[in-house]
Image (tube, rainbow over all chains, first blue to last red; front, side, top):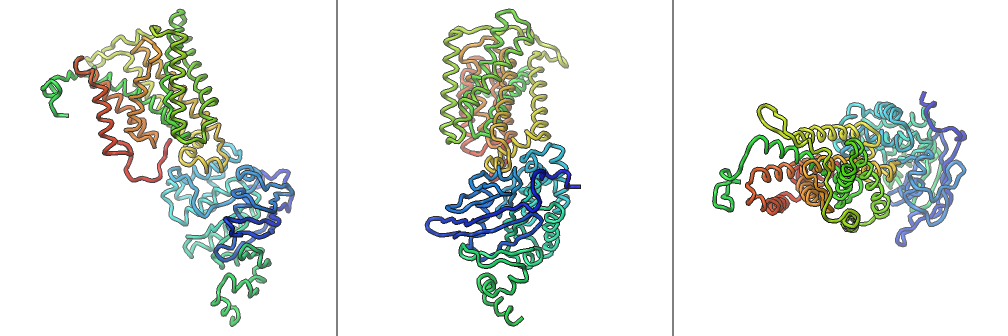
Length: 259
Length: 312
């Protein structure tokens, strides 16, 4: 049912968001050193790595909030490296933020509607999407509350709802589960899966919650010090001891070895 | 105010308070509230204090005066008035606001000063300093008797029109996509743009609405002051700006209340004080403005200490 309204006409199945050889430095610090990454529709890719590994920089480059010093970003075969975030949004690329960019004095529902309106949905369609997404994310009870009154976890979910309101082909989620109580993580897993399975979107998921990453990702991409360290299925990554030492720390390494 | 007035008499003894004065004060407050909305809307989305708002009203008033001079029917004059303020506000947006949008608020404020004096000079050149009479709606100055009190028709019209405008505005902001975009842009312009809110459309809408309101204000003010000169509405604009700042510029509601309050105060004191005292009115009014700002720099009608506010 959602298929009829998705703006994916002309989008080839299996279309791809691709970063190729992306490099970015800040004041001499090389945040990304030639990173390549592919995200297809109908899949969830995890992006993990220690703090400062370059995860957010990569998301910023992919979403147009930052320009790479070298390398390109392609969306469905078109180079979009210098496109504005909004132009990318209209072409099916959405993101969430670590820090809430919600309009704090607008209602939760209005926050979602405005995202849908922004990519050209009509007022009625925007209302419909908002209702549907607030349901999906369990925010219906707060739909008339102002966004500023939401708890931290609900604010993150509102960010996800806003990104999904654009009916994206690709969603970049920057720590969407941070601040969610542990009990709500399984519910969030279901949300990510439904974005993949029902909306057919490709999801790039950054999060520190390894249980969530391992549970929902089809593939995992590991960054360390601005470089790709490993890529593979959750099973493969879990067994990669390099990753364990870089990301999970010594104790995890011991656990992995003994377990 | 219980302190003795300049003449040494208690204030209550020199004030002439009656229902008619009160009604007139509410009427003036309503007109000033509309001006405050016109100024506040544009400030909300552009962070621009449009000092030239009074000259928009002046242009509307000249349109009414020219129509009345040529003996046009009332509706044609009103139409011309709307056409003049709308055309002028859109031109202002296109030629001044839009190119300067990314400049600092100070640059934009000074630019609107320049626009104000430019328009005033053009009016002086075209129409001379003697002024023209906009007389076609003068009959609205006739009183009607409401509950034994004589109230001028224009007072009732002003109150009703202001209420209708404010209700329409609330509906526009609360129930339409453009309104939602305007509110979002007023809270966080950058994020709104990222989400696809079209800056020019939002700013254009705010300027358009503020131009419409300028026409309505011009009609109301010419009934009370039919003599249209290049300085028309200049003093009103300064008073309203003071009211908007006193009320709290950061929210449209508080700005509107501020406009109403200063209009009411100035209408009430102007009507209630004897003539030899009322010449001190502006100094008194601005003295109060300074006092309020010293005590409540954020505005009278804002909650102190609130970080995130809705500006439209």
